[in-house]
Image 1 (cartoon, rainbow, N blue to C red):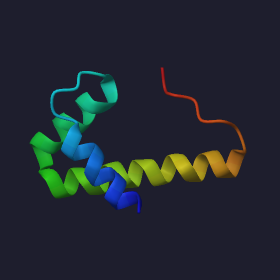
Image 2: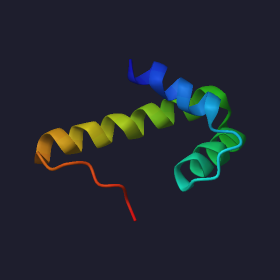
Image 3: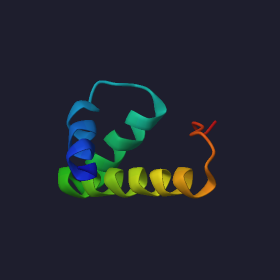
Length: 62
C-alpha cells in the first residue's frame, strides 16, 4: 500500500512547487519514475516507523 501511495505522489508531483514535491521531481529526473517511487515509499515507511516508535505526532521538517 505504501508503494501504491508513493506512485500516486510521484505521478502528481510535476507542476507542484512545495519543497517535498520539488524533491520528488528532482529525484524523478535523476533516477526515473520507478526508482523515485521506491525512494518515496522508503521515506514514508521510515517516517511511519519513527512516529510509531517515539509516539510523538508527525512534525514537518523545517
